Image 1 (cartoon, rainbow, N blue to C red):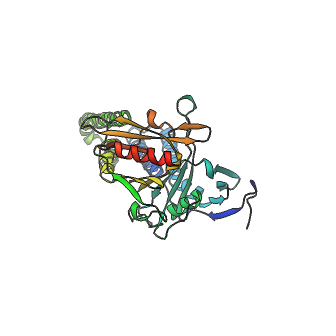
Image 2: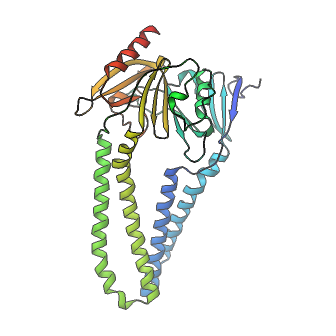
Image 3: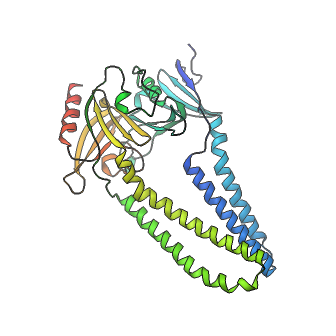
Length: 362
């Protein structure tokens, strides 16, 4: 059996991304920079043809934005193409060329899986280590992007025996349990709480939409007045630039508003919590969270708005620290990253008792 060159551990599994793709966030950035480049180029054309002044600076800025758009679109694909993943008997290693990151298997607190909706059986496996809160709070994660059967790989990292049902993200979580595992409790969130981040994003979306509407109302009269002063081609370029500018502002408002208002409501309907004999599992859309119950040190129940709902926070037992992952029960926002938190449930006593009993038995 081969051994790792740095740690000397036995290599149990090696792999690489099944496909090379540009993540959604980078695609949005690329689209924004491309629009800014086209807008700048359109206004530079109008200024040059109508006022006959130098527009070199505007052209340089347009070219710079176009370059950033191209880099945001293609660089992640090129970078992921050279990734290599290794699982040894003690470490999980991420490597690209001379770049190398690793995490001890024993220190991994829980894992997130983000399934690729377009490629069955492929997804990102994010390994998270619980760290202290407060001044020592930091993010310790290792992401294995676009691996095949990420739930099966997570079972290998945990040292568990993968089941034959694993590897299909379209199947319910309850049908992909490991051998001998059984569901003890299950529930769904009954509300999508308004966190500070969500309220702020909603306000920001309204401000951007208001700025876009105000710009539209103020730009129409000047454009109408210069209609007879420009050639048909120059006026068409001006209209294109104005329309693209409004499209950029509108798109920003829609993206922020969707993330703040629509997405949490949609994901609430697709979220389900499970407590099994071995783990805590959460499924939210294409995302999953898997947490071994042995990692749970405490369970904290807190009110969650009205309707007598509660949030159940799982405090994790990490190396030399007991804390929720990143910030946990002391202020995390589970609407962004899937966290080991049961949000807005009406029966917090049952999972609390089950987890306490399982912890006591362990």
